Length: 284
Ligand code: PAF
Image 1 (spheres, rainbow, N blue to C red):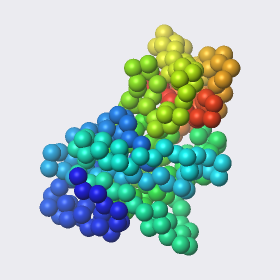
Image 2: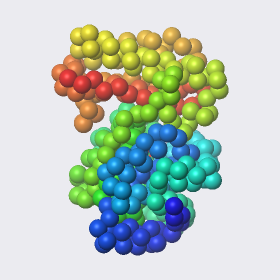
Image 3: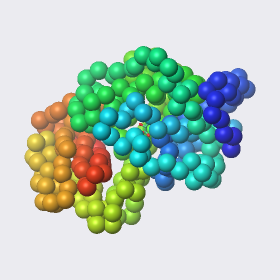
C-alpha cells in the first residue's frame, strides 16, 4: 500500500492509473477505521475489479465540525488505520495535510440546498456544507470513477448523490448497508467514547428502529405513529436524549404523512456526550 500526503502526487497517480485503463474506486473517511469502513473498501474493490486502484483517504475535516463539536477530540490513530487499510487491500492511502486542503484565504464552499438544512443539518448548522465541500475537493484530487459511502450516514449519502448529479461529477456513488456489532449497535468511530453503561443504553436506538420496522411490516403506514413509537421507546431511557426521529422519503428526505413509497426512519440521539445516528429503511 502506498502512502501519499501530497494532493498533486495523488492526482498524478490516479490519472496514470486511469490512463492505463484501471478503474479508480475511492473511499473517503475521517479515519479511526472499523469493520464498516472495511466493507466500503470491499465494495470499492468489487466495483473496480482486481486490477482497479482502491484509494482510501483519511482527513478529519475541520469545516464539517461546529465550534462546540468534537473536532479536536475526534478519535485518531493513523498507525492502526494504515495496518487495517493495508490488510483490507487498499492500494493507496491518501492523508492530506490540513494546510494543503484549506490553504490561506480559502473562501469557496459547496452547499446542497434544502437537503442540508433539515434533520442532522438543523442540529449541526454548516455540517453538510463542510462535508459537500471536502467531498468535492477530494473528488477533484483523487479523480475516482467510483466512490463508496456508508448508508449509516443516510442524509450524507443522499446529499452526495444529489451533489454528483447537480454538478455533473462523472463519479458513480455506491451506498453500502450499515454494519452492526452483534448487539445491533451501528458501527461508528464515535462508539469508542461510550462507557459500558452508555453502550447498553445506546442499544435502545437500533431496538426502537427495529420495532418501528416490524410495526410497518405488520401494516402501520402512518409516519407520525411510526416516529412516535420510536420516540416513546427512546424517551424511556433517562440517560438518553432524543435529537430527532423522523420518517422521510428516501431520496428527497421530505417529511411524509403516510409510507406509500420507500421511506426511511432517521434518528439521532445523545448518550452522555456522544451523539449517535441510525436509520431503518421501510421498503414498499
Ligand atoms: O463520512 C465521513 O467520514 C465524512 O463525512 C467524509 C465523507 C469522509 C467527509 O469528511
